[in-house]
Length: 311
Image (cartoon, rainbow, N blue to C red; front, side):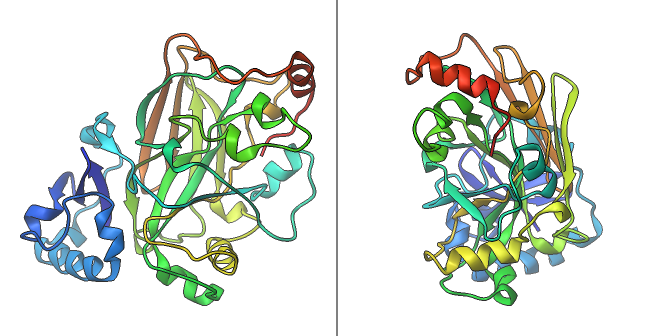
């Protein structure tokens, strides 16, 4: 099953068309896109029955459907209470960033106001904005202190995300400011659809990648993660309760801008196209002049320019 957010309304993706959830369920679910996660088990049971009746199981999904590129397509979970992100969670990315593989998940948060839809015009803040294509998990049940075997049952599905990062602000202090530097407006695009785990041949081995102005920047498979989806969900649940609609950015493969020689970052006019197997594409277009942002001392900017580290 795949769901989308059309102008704030929950929609099932049936073959090549979106079906409004509230209308199809005769008011039992919806209309808000994020409302389905609060009653995920009930919604999933209804949706599976509806799709079976529609014969959707025999209709293949086309991730290049024209309506999925509409700017009105929103984030599948547009108002998460919590947004987590896992750093250094791909072996090759940890190596390119100059770190040893972590023994436990390296977790930071993104502010929920950074979450946006998959087709956006991004006003760049001052600094050095980097890309990080990621698989994103959406939580579909309250979960606390669950084990790894229970984790898939509390995951509603997977979508595509970009953990955009402003690297100068990230390093403008005695310790990295991950959350702050990764939470500007538009720094958490997700979508265009969320797919349940059973839609993937192997939900732990999904291809993701991104291109900048047509040039391949990142390409990898989620089987390259240090910590799997189940390990991350279980580990987080032993720290804090997880809530329906929460989203977890699961890490990025190698190829970020900060690790290139010379470093490369987004500039006005750039188009960043990201993709995920079984989910589709998202487009981030940098427009206009960069917005004014927090001042970063020149010494910090120089130190950042000399560093290859990015998480």
